[in-house]
Amino acid sequence: MAQPGKIVSLCRSSCQERVISYSLLRPLLFRLEAETAHHVTLKALRVAHGFGVASLSTGPALDAPREVMGLRFPNPVGLAAGLDKNGEYIDALADLGFGFIEVGTVTPRPQPGNPRPRMFRLPQAEAIINRMGFNNDGIEALLANVARARYRGILGINIGKNFDTPVERAVDDYLIGLRKVYAHASYVTVNISSPNTADLRQLQEREALLALLGALKREQAALAERHGKYVPLTVKIAPDLTVEAIHDVAAIVRELRVDGVIATNTTVSRAGVENLPHAQESGGLSGAPLTARATEVVRQLCAALAGEVPVIAVGGILSGADAVEKVRAGASLVQIYSGLIYRGPRLVAEAVAALHDVG
Image 1: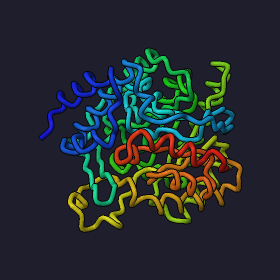
Image 2: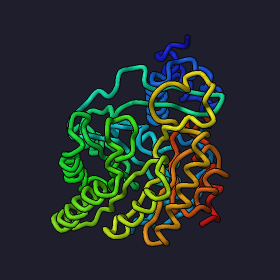
Image 3: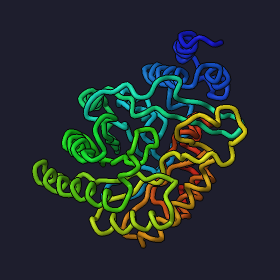
Image 4: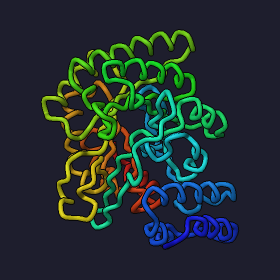
């Protein structure tokens, strides 16, 4: 098995002379356990950033600005939450050409998440299953990392509840999160759709969602007055909602004037991967098997929102064509994560180029 230290050393010794293609590194990374490879990749990217060469592996960046939620995005392709939970790699990830970066999910208190192993690749399907469980170092650690970062682009901070906070008191955790991150975020995302925290998805039910978002919108107004700036609030939903539930979400978002919806999180469905190794593992499925369902949710949601609230699409974007499909379904922006694992950093430039004249 490839050794994590050797991969980082390989990048360190070679980055001074040339950029290593991700297609060459991927077979080595895929010999590592998935979560180990995740951390090794981020450390290697930070090494490349230190040498000032990380951006050379992505191809030329295109200027494709979008005005969404009152913010100017230099391009419509963002990094989805989950890759950098603690905001430790913001500057290195910015080298890849993203139009915006979302960090987290972060909880008020540190927590270890679920036991390892908790991340599994299904390469035959270009998919990933994870049951991480909001593992993070807590909100204070994330804010310290954000303060150290030199990145001055659009930064989303994704907030959640601690695993041991009863769902009936979830609003308390989300209010803590919003208050803490407000001054440091370009926008804040309310994550109520991870399948890996017990009962979390109950917060998507109509009455619970109305109460939670209502409280957060009231606090957003108070914080805007206190800080002298308005920070948009988005909510991230699951791909497993029924048509009726999608319409409920849209109605509540419109009623409360929530600033945006991120669609979608991972799915508990195993359609398309049923007989593959690791398909029986619990957790959320992402990657290519989610593409069609995530796009359909975006289409239904955008129709129900009637253009009043922008949608950020995420789920199964592994090519520029996938990004275009999401925008044609009604999305204003897109985010990627699993596609980076299978396609590497060049996917960012490919998606930006594909969306340059779309939307």
